[in-house]
Length: 116
Image 1 (cartoon, rainbow, N blue to C red):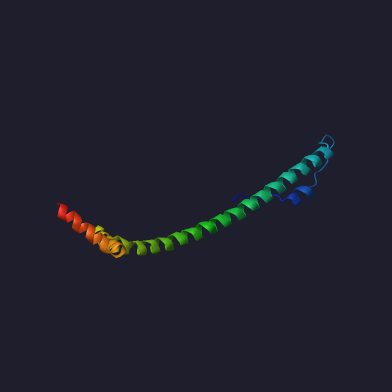
Image 2 (spheres, rainbow, N blue to C red):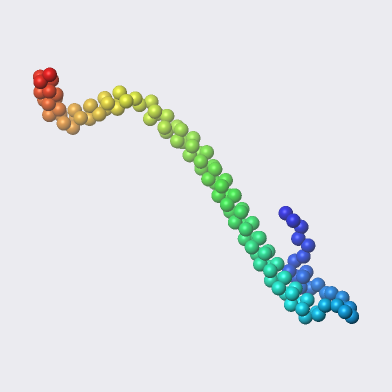
């Protein structure tokens, strides 16, 4: 970070030597008052941005931890599901149909097999 040479208070308290053909002190004071206002605004904005940056970095850390923990859980939960084959699903579906429809399914299968 760049070195800051003056605070708003330093600018306000700066005394300039007067010479015979120098600048108008009222103009210099008015200009420096505006510089102080801008400097204070930049200082506040800089602090706000630093605070926001710290907050966002903490949020990134938190989300990164959640992803790493969540990613491990996802891998662990998805592995058993990938062991199920299509044949297993068909068997389960067939058993479910038999249970739900009972004899209706058996009688309709026997009718269709006689037609063949």
